[in-house]
Image (tube, rainbow, N blue to C red):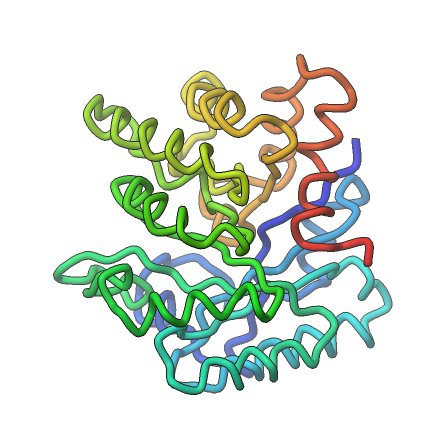
Length: 293
């Protein structure tokens, strides 16, 4: 079954700065990962990619990354496989409306991801030290996404899921995609209960969707038996029509190969009826990210 990979990152350290891994975290990641490499890893079984912003230095103009993605989509021989791009914007910025307008001038643009996980002290550059949900400016900025017809990719810790659901209940017009299963923790019963509660709270909102990606967080060795309980939980909560798949390449390269990731997806969803497998493998992503427009 053909896959639309709803979570891939492309980057080039000759073009942009990426503090989250260039400052020493995640040794082993390549300096460059472009569409050619994604296609080589994925092979013909993956029809298209949704590329998610790669945490370019926040001091730089985020629209430059979108411009680069559009150039790839327009000029690469297989540019049509870059089906959509989820860009970065700081929702608390006073010029947010203008930033979104500039993103939207590029047809590849589909939405925004601003990571909101936080921890004090922060262990790396892409993890904040402040809770954006507590920021009035950020909350006001979020309201502009529906006006821009932009989705929002939610990257947060498992214990943030329920607070996010409470906030998102007031924003039913914005489509929200929860990245990486909502960051569950393996082997911690209390954390599992907190995660399940958050998953259920979010699933109760019809404008939310779940991205089954980043599965090495559930098990770094990609043991299907360890991963399965998390996948079954989100599948039960959201249903196939609100779930999509993402490889999280190239970060997932540190623990696996694309073939292993793809095989795991095939195994985990083998018992679903054909029409439900099609939803998980491609149709949900097509609808959420408007890939057929």
